[in-house]
Amino acid sequence: MTGADSRTEDLLRELAPQVLGALVRRHGQFHLCEDATQEALLAAATQWQANGPPDHPRAWLNTVATRRLLDLMRAEASRQEREDRVAAATPQSELLSAPADEPPLDSDDSLALLFGCCHPGLSVPSQIALTLRAVGGLTTAQIAAAFGVPEATMAQRISRAKQDIRASGPDLTVPAEPERTQRLRSVLHVLYLIFNEGYTTTSGEDLTAPALSQEAIRLTRWLHRLLPSDSEVTGLLALMLLTDARRAARTLPDGSLVPLAEQDRGIWDRQLISEGTALITAALPVGRPGPYQLQAAIAAVHDEAATMADTDWRQILSLYDILVAIAPNPFTTVNRAVAVAMVHGPAAGLDIIAGLAADKRMSRHHRLIATQAHLLELSGDTSAAAASYREAARYATSLPERRYLSLQAQRLSPRA
Image (cartoon, rainbow, N blue to C red; front, side, top):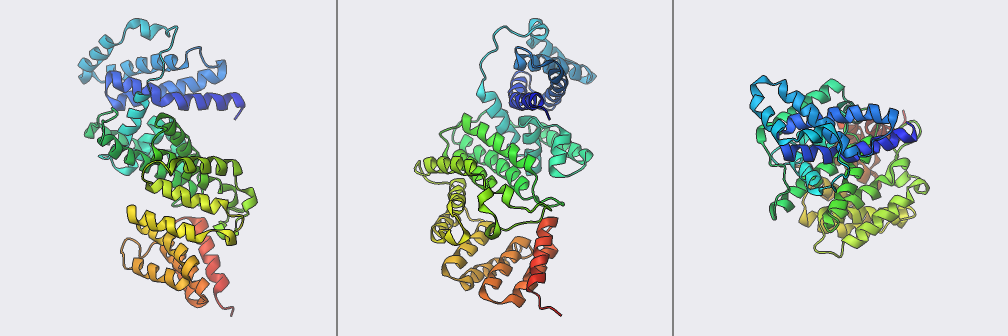
């Protein structure tokens, strides 16, 4: 991709939620407005790369998207009344030319769109698909490639997502407090899930899907600009940056997984670490720390250690103790078990793992079993550790993780 192509793509992705948000606010009909916006973005990608962006790029997109919306509504003969409403509400002069002075961005349009796409009444897959397409401005093909699924599969998923939002009829406005705070949790959760899927894919041959992580970071940066005083938004951005800073060290050239203890910390991205550390340092003293801030603080302690041996495990354990108390989660408890083992010995960590194994949600999860294997190895029980590594490999759906766990089992198995 050339520099000009990249700049055009960045501009379109920045403008996508602004255009769609304004279109939905004016005309309603999210599903039609979303289709119209996508077609305008595709038209712009072709024309702007050839001729350069117009003087008023957002107005250009608004005009093309509105025209396309009228076409879509005309195609639905049974919805003639809606077409008339749109035509009546849109001055012809707006359709024919761009305004000399583009109005300043009404950030509530974009923010309301994000709140609507992450409405708690929608399923999580619907929230993710709508966020990436409507707010992120990604095409169906781009989203499908990032998730490693056929484009037709992703098209069906997005279609279902639009049906969900049409049936649920969520209000695409920024809610008032206290609902806004509650809804913001859904927004942050969706961005967190997108980042995590990109950082460690749940299935497939690649350990990571960088396009998803980068999109999650981009959207969270944008959300942070809109809500700079929200400490949990800041915490999530810090967490993503501090975690993504290790990406280059997580795999070998052949794609093999490299665990944290064996990573070359010299190739960690120090610029991201500095930015993330500054963000979380500023956020923690403001109010009561939330789960994203605490996870970011834990990530910062890991990133600040020059070697695995230099890691301040007592500080990490203290942070996990708070995190488990305010946001109980079995996977957080698994991570805490490792910290407990590093501070109080592997037997103490194994006791926690044994308690989690009784939870049906976790008993066959490869992460729990792999952690058990790691702690058994630390305790000196290599035979039991090898058996646990083999079991974890059977349940892992990511091929790099499965290969790594199988290799650990082979390493600890007695040679014939």
